[in-house]
Length: 247
Ligand code: GLP
Image (cartoon, rainbow, N blue to C red; front, top):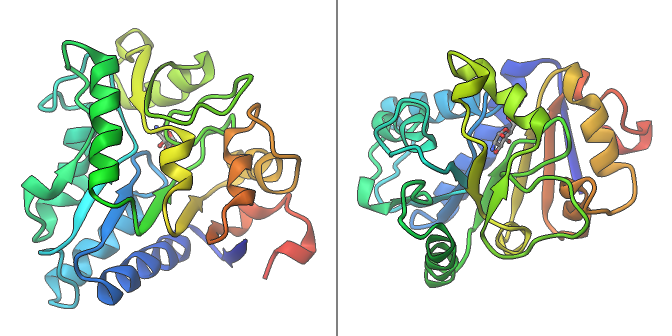
């Protein structure tokens, strides 16, 4: 695993965006696995800026997102569909037909999971998967549990996740309790993984994930078995990693 430590959130966002931009320049028709959450917003802003400056073209790029809340329609303002439009897609020249997220309103959510895995396979997997990290070590919405769940699946969100994500809703009662998430198999199938972390509130999750045993109790810990992972974090988020891991 490669670790890139930066001074602050802005510099972390720049590094994460640079890795994504390098991927697009290397392979203009690449498949990007994308994440939602607060951490990656700054990176998406940089990508939009570079696009506006004529330095980055998304015309050939296809994207596949990690997850979506069950029950939220794509138009819902808190859906991950609308997050992606707002934070990235509307600001770049990507073809909306080349952007994919699970459908949170599918009549049969489990069938939607199978469709999503088929889609991922047909796309040939992600060239680069961007990830954030939950406070409990989740990636996508793969919550801590007894085993690593490999396929895309319907998940009951952990109480701590519902609480953490409630800051984006007007009340905690509005946060959906279930979601569809790409599984650990889909994430580990990516050829490159970039994990973005920021802030001291993530330091413990970073330590558990990258300096402890590989365990489904900390889903992100599986990434230590991936052969091309870059952890990009600001000083505060990486503070609890052993010194020899930090550069
Ligand atoms: C959400 C998303 C994850 C994201 C995580 C961290 O639950 N499903 O994909 O990585 O939260 O979010 P944040 O960056 O806001 O801390």
